[in-house]
Image (tube, rainbow, N blue to C red; front, side):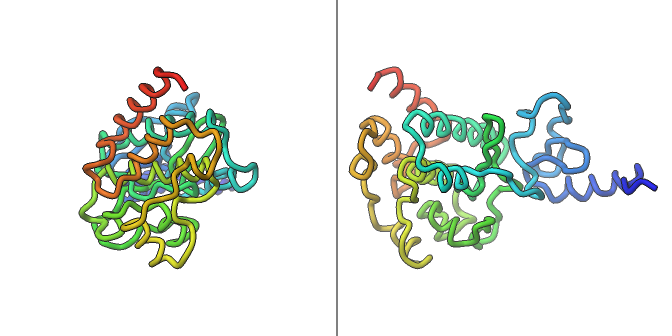
Length: 241
Protein backbone atom coordinates (compact mmCIF):
# COMPACT_ATOMS: atom_id res chain seq x y z
CA UNK A 1 0.00 0.00 0.00
CA UNK A 2 1.29 3.47 -0.90
CA UNK A 3 2.30 5.84 1.89
CA UNK A 4 1.38 8.85 -0.25
CA UNK A 5 -1.55 10.87 1.17
CA UNK A 6 -4.76 10.79 -0.83
CA UNK A 7 -6.15 13.86 -2.57
CA UNK A 8 -8.22 15.15 0.34
CA UNK A 9 -5.38 14.68 2.82
CA UNK A 10 -2.98 16.41 0.44
CA UNK A 11 -5.39 19.35 0.10
CA UNK A 12 -5.57 19.72 3.87
CA UNK A 13 -1.79 19.61 4.18
CA UNK A 14 -1.49 22.29 1.49
CA UNK A 15 -4.06 24.50 3.19
CA UNK A 16 -2.18 24.22 6.47
CA UNK A 17 1.20 24.93 4.85
CA UNK A 18 -0.16 27.88 2.86
CA UNK A 19 -1.67 29.43 5.98
CA UNK A 20 1.63 29.22 7.84
CA UNK A 21 3.92 30.43 5.06
CA UNK A 22 4.80 34.12 4.92
CA UNK A 23 7.01 33.54 1.89
CA UNK A 24 8.12 30.20 0.54
CA UNK A 25 7.37 27.07 -1.40
CA UNK A 26 4.69 24.68 -0.24
CA UNK A 27 6.46 21.34 0.39
CA UNK A 28 3.37 19.44 -0.81
CA UNK A 29 2.22 21.13 -4.01
CA UNK A 30 5.28 23.21 -4.91
CA UNK A 31 3.35 26.49 -5.27
CA UNK A 32 5.14 29.69 -4.25
CA UNK A 33 3.26 31.37 -1.40
CA UNK A 34 3.27 34.99 -0.23
CA UNK A 35 1.37 35.67 3.01
CA UNK A 36 -0.83 32.63 2.60
CA UNK A 37 -1.75 33.26 -1.05
CA UNK A 38 -0.56 31.37 -4.12
CA UNK A 39 1.57 33.78 -6.12
CA UNK A 40 3.05 31.32 -8.62
CA UNK A 41 2.31 27.76 -9.64
CA UNK A 42 5.14 25.20 -9.65
CA UNK A 43 7.38 24.98 -12.70
CA UNK A 44 8.62 21.43 -13.11
CA UNK A 45 11.57 22.34 -15.28
CA UNK A 46 12.65 25.56 -13.60
CA UNK A 47 14.59 25.26 -10.34
CA UNK A 48 15.00 29.03 -10.17
CA UNK A 49 11.23 29.47 -9.95
CA UNK A 50 11.38 28.90 -6.19
CA UNK A 51 14.41 30.73 -4.82
CA UNK A 52 12.90 31.04 -1.33
CA UNK A 53 12.99 27.73 0.51
CA UNK A 54 10.00 26.66 2.57
CA UNK A 55 12.05 26.44 5.73
CA UNK A 56 10.86 22.89 6.39
CA UNK A 57 13.98 21.40 4.84
CA UNK A 58 17.64 21.78 5.75
CA UNK A 59 19.74 23.66 3.22
CA UNK A 60 22.22 21.16 1.80
CA UNK A 61 25.08 23.64 1.46
CA UNK A 62 25.10 27.15 2.88
CA UNK A 63 27.35 30.13 2.40
CA UNK A 64 28.58 29.56 5.94
CA UNK A 65 29.49 25.95 5.06
CA UNK A 66 31.29 27.09 1.93
CA UNK A 67 33.48 29.66 3.68
CA UNK A 68 34.22 27.38 6.63
CA UNK A 69 35.27 24.57 4.28
CA UNK A 70 36.92 26.38 1.37
CA UNK A 71 38.00 29.65 2.92
CA UNK A 72 37.10 33.22 2.13
CA UNK A 73 35.81 34.08 -1.32
CA UNK A 74 37.73 35.86 -4.02
CA UNK A 75 36.70 39.45 -4.70
CA UNK A 76 34.96 38.36 -7.90
CA UNK A 77 33.05 35.55 -6.18
CA UNK A 78 31.99 37.80 -3.32
CA UNK A 79 30.72 40.52 -5.66
CA UNK A 80 28.80 37.97 -7.72
CA UNK A 81 27.09 36.55 -4.64
CA UNK A 82 26.48 40.04 -3.25
CA UNK A 83 24.61 40.96 -6.42
CA UNK A 84 22.64 37.70 -6.43
CA UNK A 85 21.54 38.11 -2.81
CA UNK A 86 20.65 41.76 -3.39
CA UNK A 87 18.46 40.73 -6.34
CA UNK A 88 16.66 38.16 -4.17
CA UNK A 89 16.09 40.75 -1.45
CA UNK A 90 14.84 43.30 -3.96
CA UNK A 91 12.35 40.78 -5.32
CA UNK A 92 11.20 39.85 -1.83
CA UNK A 93 10.85 43.46 -0.73
CA UNK A 94 8.27 44.05 -3.46
CA UNK A 95 5.79 41.91 -1.52
CA UNK A 96 6.99 42.09 2.10
CA UNK A 97 8.45 44.65 4.49
CA UNK A 98 11.70 42.80 5.15
CA UNK A 99 13.41 39.42 5.17
CA UNK A 100 14.56 39.79 8.75
CA UNK A 101 17.24 37.16 9.37
CA UNK A 102 19.83 37.35 6.62
CA UNK A 103 22.99 35.48 7.58
CA UNK A 104 25.41 33.04 5.91
CA UNK A 105 23.66 30.09 7.58
CA UNK A 106 20.38 31.10 5.90
CA UNK A 107 21.83 31.51 2.40
CA UNK A 108 21.93 28.26 0.47
CA UNK A 109 24.17 27.63 -2.53
CA UNK A 110 22.78 25.25 -5.13
CA UNK A 111 23.65 24.75 -8.80
CA UNK A 112 25.08 28.22 -9.15
CA UNK A 113 22.00 29.83 -7.54
CA UNK A 114 21.34 31.20 -4.09
CA UNK A 115 18.40 30.15 -1.93
CA UNK A 116 17.17 32.18 1.03
CA UNK A 117 15.76 30.06 3.80
CA UNK A 118 12.11 30.80 4.64
CA UNK A 119 9.55 31.48 5.89
CA UNK A 120 11.65 34.44 6.78
CA UNK A 121 9.65 37.59 7.28
CA UNK A 122 10.45 39.27 10.59
CA UNK A 123 7.67 38.72 13.08
CA UNK A 124 5.68 41.53 14.64
CA UNK A 125 7.05 40.58 18.06
CA UNK A 126 10.19 41.99 19.60
CA UNK A 127 11.81 38.56 19.80
CA UNK A 128 15.10 37.95 18.01
CA UNK A 129 14.60 35.68 14.98
CA UNK A 130 16.00 32.17 15.31
CA UNK A 131 18.31 30.45 12.84
CA UNK A 132 19.74 26.97 12.66
CA UNK A 133 22.86 28.41 14.29
CA UNK A 134 20.77 29.88 17.13
CA UNK A 135 20.60 33.40 18.45
CA UNK A 136 24.40 33.73 18.52
CA UNK A 137 24.60 33.37 14.74
CA UNK A 138 21.91 35.93 13.96
CA UNK A 139 23.30 38.41 16.50
CA UNK A 140 26.33 38.87 14.25
CA UNK A 141 24.13 40.13 11.39
CA UNK A 142 21.36 42.16 13.05
CA UNK A 143 20.98 45.85 12.21
CA UNK A 144 21.28 48.16 15.23
CA UNK A 145 17.60 49.11 15.14
CA UNK A 146 16.50 45.51 14.66
CA UNK A 147 18.14 44.42 17.89
CA UNK A 148 16.29 47.16 19.76
CA UNK A 149 12.83 46.51 18.32
CA UNK A 150 12.20 44.02 15.53
CA UNK A 151 8.64 45.31 15.07
CA UNK A 152 9.82 48.82 14.18
CA UNK A 153 12.32 47.99 11.44
CA UNK A 154 12.02 47.84 7.68
CA UNK A 155 13.87 46.57 4.61
CA UNK A 156 16.86 48.80 5.34
CA UNK A 157 17.75 46.39 8.16
CA UNK A 158 18.28 43.76 5.46
CA UNK A 159 20.69 46.14 3.73
CA UNK A 160 22.75 46.29 6.93
CA UNK A 161 22.70 42.51 7.25
CA UNK A 162 23.82 42.24 3.62
CA UNK A 163 26.82 44.41 4.47
CA UNK A 164 27.66 42.01 7.30
CA UNK A 165 27.38 39.08 4.89
CA UNK A 166 29.77 40.78 2.44
CA UNK A 167 32.20 41.29 5.32
CA UNK A 168 31.93 37.60 6.17
CA UNK A 169 32.54 36.52 2.57
CA UNK A 170 35.76 38.53 2.39
CA UNK A 171 37.10 38.10 5.93
CA UNK A 172 35.58 34.82 7.13
CA UNK A 173 34.06 36.59 10.13
CA UNK A 174 31.21 38.98 10.75
CA UNK A 175 32.17 42.60 11.57
CA UNK A 176 31.79 42.00 15.34
CA UNK A 177 32.43 38.31 15.90
CA UNK A 178 33.80 38.24 19.44
CA UNK A 179 32.28 38.59 22.88
CA UNK A 180 28.97 37.55 24.37
CA UNK A 181 25.69 38.03 22.52
CA UNK A 182 25.01 41.22 24.48
CA UNK A 183 28.49 42.54 23.72
CA UNK A 184 28.12 41.82 20.02
CA UNK A 185 24.74 43.52 19.82
CA UNK A 186 26.16 46.54 21.64
CA UNK A 187 29.09 46.73 19.23
CA UNK A 188 26.63 46.92 16.34
CA UNK A 189 25.10 49.91 18.13
CA UNK A 190 28.19 51.94 18.98
CA UNK A 191 31.37 50.65 17.33
CA UNK A 192 32.66 50.94 13.78
CA UNK A 193 33.97 47.73 12.19
CA UNK A 194 37.58 47.44 11.14
CA UNK A 195 37.69 48.64 7.50
CA UNK A 196 37.78 45.80 4.99
CA UNK A 197 40.83 47.30 3.33
CA UNK A 198 42.72 47.01 6.61
CA UNK A 199 42.03 43.32 7.15
CA UNK A 200 42.31 42.02 3.61
CA UNK A 201 44.74 43.10 0.99
CA UNK A 202 43.37 43.87 -2.44
CA UNK A 203 39.82 44.90 -1.51
CA UNK A 204 38.94 47.66 -4.00
CA UNK A 205 38.24 51.00 -2.37
CA UNK A 206 34.91 51.25 -4.20
CA UNK A 207 33.73 47.89 -2.86
CA UNK A 208 34.86 48.81 0.66
CA UNK A 209 32.87 52.04 0.36
CA UNK A 210 29.76 50.08 -0.65
CA UNK A 211 30.20 47.86 2.38
CA UNK A 212 30.73 50.85 4.67
CA UNK A 213 27.51 52.47 3.51
CA UNK A 214 25.49 49.28 3.97
CA UNK A 215 26.87 49.11 7.51
CA UNK A 216 25.87 52.65 8.47
CA UNK A 217 24.46 52.71 12.02
CA UNK A 218 21.46 54.84 11.07
CA UNK A 219 19.07 53.38 8.50
CA UNK A 220 18.69 56.73 6.72
CA UNK A 221 22.43 56.77 6.00
CA UNK A 222 22.45 53.37 4.25
CA UNK A 223 21.39 52.50 0.76
CA UNK A 224 17.63 52.82 1.02
CA UNK A 225 16.86 49.56 -0.78
CA UNK A 226 18.43 46.41 -2.15
CA UNK A 227 17.91 47.88 -5.61
CA UNK A 228 20.08 50.84 -4.60
CA UNK A 229 22.81 48.35 -3.62
CA UNK A 230 22.56 46.73 -7.06
CA UNK A 231 22.85 50.12 -8.75
CA UNK A 232 25.86 51.04 -6.61
CA UNK A 233 27.63 47.80 -7.58
CA UNK A 234 26.90 48.40 -11.26
CA UNK A 235 28.18 51.96 -11.02
CA UNK A 236 31.36 50.85 -9.26
CA UNK A 237 32.02 48.11 -11.84
CA UNK A 238 31.44 50.57 -14.69
CA UNK A 239 34.04 52.92 -13.24
CA UNK A 240 36.65 50.18 -13.23
CA UNK A 241 39.20 49.27 -10.53
